[in-house]
Length: 172
Image (tube, rainbow, N blue to C red; front, side, top):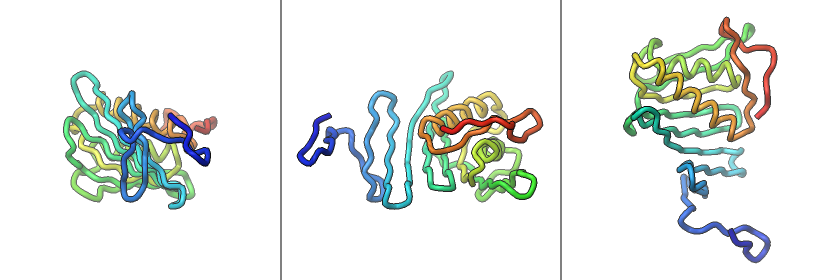
């Protein structure tokens, strides 16, 4: 990385990309890409791919100020079912609904519900993980939560065995 006139850092052109007028930088080694646009309220876009036991999982996270949009693709770039989940008052429960395809018994609804419990944020999740793959669902959720922690700016809570958040939490 070189310092340009005016003290700004220059990135090699091969690492730059543009998404909806936002310039981002490919992080290189892990294949993940991240972009942000502070002028538009801190929108952060991240895409990455993980291979787990011969299954390729593709992820895209769009982090807004009070909402997370995430897509999980299993072995393809197929959109899958779309779910919306949000915290409800007064008892900190979570409401989940399917917006496109699927039902409440699909992998995406459970992941969306648990992400809301962990973050307290509204979540829109598109997911095409096969219905009867609980281990794949758990692994995909772990990868998504870990990336949210690495991106920072989100308070993540552990979930107690009863389904609600534990008393302790950490800020990431």
